[in-house]
Amino acid sequence: MTTQLDKHTIRRRIAWRVAQEMRDGDIVNLGIGLPTLVANEVDKEVEILMQAENGLLGIDNLATEENADPDLVNAGAQPITAIEGSCYFDSAASFAIIRGGHVDSTVLGALQVDEQGNLANWIIPGKMVPGMGGAMDLVVGAKKVIVAMEHTVKGKAKLLRQCSLPLTAVNQVDLIVTEMGVIEITSKGMLLTELAPEFTVEDVQAATEAKLVVSDNLKPMALPV
Image 1 (cartoon, rainbow, N blue to C red):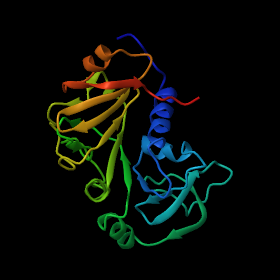
Image 2: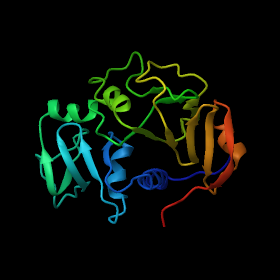
Image 3: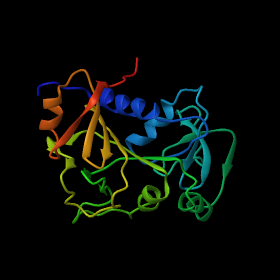
């Protein structure tokens, strides 16, 4: 595989494709990092409510330098904007929404995902982290779990037969979107449903430790204009 995409193209592609999964009326939680970019890619014709686990329902876009409010940030401490009619509350209420099953989709990054839909995204042993955050609650409480991530890290596979890092949750991942394609977690394993135009099925398999099942209806990955 020789195709090289720049970082901006990769991140925008993933965020845009994830945004296509959003439906009218959805309540959506965006994790820190790449998933926050989804807020900028959701079609304005689609009416959703985006939740920040630190206590906001009704995120709009990421803020610019001109309209940033130091008191208005997402869970990753990034300045954000809010829609008209947004609601603010404390963390206890926020996690009551999450644990109560009121979040339709959560979008997270990952260190590893395996064939069973197991997710590892909170710690690499030996490295300091501020805490596990809300991911463990989100992936169990949300109705749909979408992983948005680059396909590999430093050339190493992140889609594995079995996760080797401490798990965030077991059997909870539904969909994976990378710069190479779209993969569903099914009872038969990882099902490749969409393929980016720069890559072949063989390219994706070479970058994936898990055995991919290729959909009979494999189609080109939808890309931003």
